[in-house]
Picture (cartoon, rainbow, N blue to C red):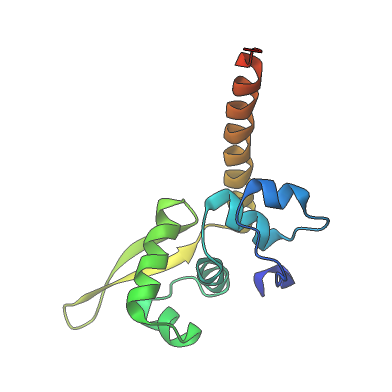
Amino acid sequence: MDSLNNESKAAFQTVEELMMASAPNFNDVMRCVFKIKDYEIEVYFYLLDHPGSTIAEVSESLKKDRSSIQRSLQTLMDKGMINRKFRVLGLGGFAYIYAATPLEETKKIMERELQVWYNMMRKLVMKFEKS
């Protein structure tokens, strides 16, 4: 899945910037809602298309440093966007394999995050009094 074919011309980093955009794309929304970087979005979509990948496979395919991929994977796991499983290798070793949370579930996570933000802003507005 090619990031839903949404290559961004303007990299919106905040909700405010996103709200002012005439046509934000899905990656823009992901970046703002999850507070993640473009390369983390790239890793998510790679894993959506290649479930069961190892760090080495992701690193090689995306041509990124292994340590950068590890950090990206940890960030995405923390956000609930991917999951990790333990796989025992034939010669007694082990490897972690990663898979993306299905896109529909990721959208639901995004919707919940936006609802939390909305509720927080609404409470602030309702508490506002002229000084």
